[in-house]
Image (cartoon, rainbow, N blue to C red; front, side, top):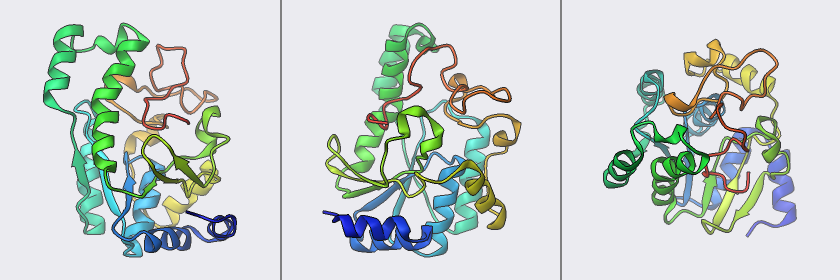
Length: 231
């Protein structure tokens, strides 16, 4: 359990120190889920550069951009790490595609959420099994749904603490960190892809559009996939 004083200490610490405080308290029970987005690349840099006891994993939905896989290889090589990859259950994917078509997620919000559940949520549940702290790259600026999130929250669904060290970071803070530390990132970010998910469900955004507008652009929804149910 985190006391109010401990949370204040974490909020006031630098990124590296905050990650160190949490991960050293829960050694071998702290995990970080990376989508290889810019926020997550910042965290990977901070974790690996400081040799923190954090297990890093990612989810491969089977529908990601080529650039994602290329970046995964570059990231592993740069930080001399081996990010663990979790895949969806082949039987689940097979049943969904045979029932709804290869792009059945375009047909309805229900279909899209089911696809996200199969390809993201179920693998995430496996990846989080046994963990006590889940580090995320969420930022409050990313969407209205995330404005009320705190740096440390109790995740009832997964029965662990969710640690959001970048929650109060601005977009410019993140970009400056990437430049100053020469952090590798997905080149799609330079072409209007601010938030990157599966290739069929992501488009570049226009100047002035909401950062999440490029995700599931055909829907009028909260633009979430279910990984962060309360965000």
